[in-house]
Image (cartoon, rainbow, N blue to C red):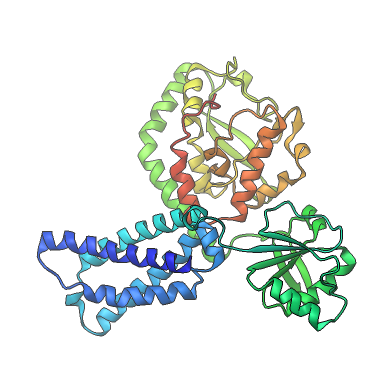
Length: 434
């Protein structure tokens, strides 16, 4: 698996710069670009290995696999540029090859690693990781797939310090990548001691943690604690996300300004009232803000609290309103909310205070509802690109969106924001947009 991913990376880098050199040579004549690969390739391999780009976690998460790879590539590119200037070999460092090759390499590494991680099981013919469950007594079994489930009745007793038993356990787990123990609460400490010397990733199943949904383990002083919320993104991640929002929203505003003017004129001609409709929504940290939309309903039919979802043949919607809702144009003024800092390009969609599913307020349907407000609400989100939009008629309509929102929060990366942004164009016209 590691060898396959390493080979894929090397092929992507070599082909990228070879293609760039081929194009450059046809345009400007022959060039000596071997120095680029001589420096970049070994530096990339070392940097990628140091960044754990070939670890099990990276091979299972496509976005982490891409992030680790690009981090290593940009570092190796910087080293190559520095080496070229330091050694005064810039004549063997053609700028067109470097710039074009780097751009192609980024695309190829991202695409290759994404496909490798997504189809790893098919590539190697099954899961590459052996996960063993040790079941002590009649402890409940976690709802997951295991390579093997080993009952421990009479086979191993962690409270009996018997070298023969430990030897037998070590032999049984010799080829396992990960072992999970399901046991009674009073046996967990004994099993923890038994696994600490087993030279394997050992874990203990604690079903009561399901309600807490912890994100990890930390400590305060000498006391271990459960992390149940990460808080805001780090300074670098916040800066990157904010820069992404400002650049994309600012560009979109300039490009779409003629469309804004046309829609504003049509709204004023279609029915009396303001051009924009503002509504109180729940934002980051559960703080309320005023969200902007193009007005798509008659003024006397507008529902500021959002108690009533819009029906397919809703008589409150104006003629131009039906068009801008169906094409999602009514959401475009939220670009102003993004520039103002109330919203982000990508994030959980903000809901009105009175929004309901199956005649229940959203937080009455699922107590995890408030968790989704740990980040700024977005113009688009993971739930939307998966098709979860429109009226919330039954509880499942909300639950599907909530699950996608929580997944987004737990696995945020700027690469995922980019992917969701591009995927949004596929769902601008949606059967539930009315």
